[in-house]
Length: 170
Length: 268
Image 1: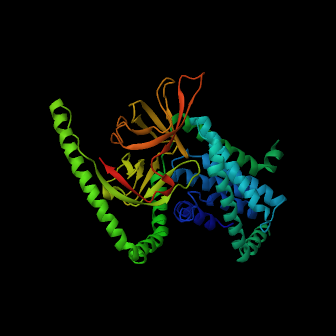
Image 2: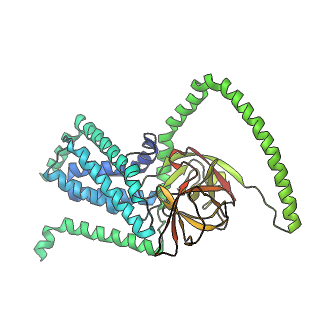
């Protein structure tokens, strides 16, 4: 993908996640926009580029929040890497299994962060968090991801991206 | 060897990057969180957050101003009743304040000054799953400074983490990086309340301390950030382990942070 697209994503990821998606929250649960975006980048580009994009977006999130610098960079980078690997081998963007895989990535990220917090600070209610926060958010993120993928598919964005990739290879 | 490096160059770079990130995280666990680049990111995101939320705020104010006008008369009557009740309570409270001040003077205690505050709207909520922060639409121009207390009518919300001219980032009570000095209202037992993402936990509470489910935790004022006596959280679970000198106390914040729309920043 073009660097300017990444620049726009980096510029807008925090405001969209924090302002726009807060308005779409259901009982305090909102989808993880950054994770859905990284997953889609993984499917469209490949593991290397998606991992780098994940690290970049995650670092911007870390700086803009109160978390440790590098924590989201690490988790989103991993999501990008694995989404890229899966995207190359088993998945295409129109597959309905993306919902399940995206939800699984969201759950894995949530569990990793909760376990990390448990190790660092202790007494994090992981069990109750899993059912009250992580699982609903994972499903919501899956639905958002599917909607984003449909949007990409319907607007010929995919063919444009493929054309750019082909031009690059040639 | 060199062939292997050339062949897997991309993945080796990624591996090194992940290792650097891992080292960064572990370094911060020991040395504390880095805050560099915080203000430029807040400036950019704050600008776009204002732009994104402004149509919503406009629509909301229009809806409140016109569509809900139908309910105004009924609400007016209810508010008049409430005001009368509050006036009565206020006059009793004023009497108690005057009496308290007089007694403090008699005892030679320092005079208490009620804090002034600034009302702010929440324009953005946390952007990262590992932290709990909100952005408010007031900043240094309104007298807000770092580490000022942020409250809601039902209790403590958090404290100001970073400030720009027109926006500020507030770290919520439930953020893992948030700690505040509290005491149990019932028996004045003291502790340190730490954020646990969706709940809070009371740290360093002795095994023998009398803490029960349903106890209200209020600020002790010992941290120098929050005024004394404000509601913070309610104890929801107490666990005692034979092997530990401390008990595990889980508490639910008094304010429903997920539905926070407005907050008061207490100016020092």
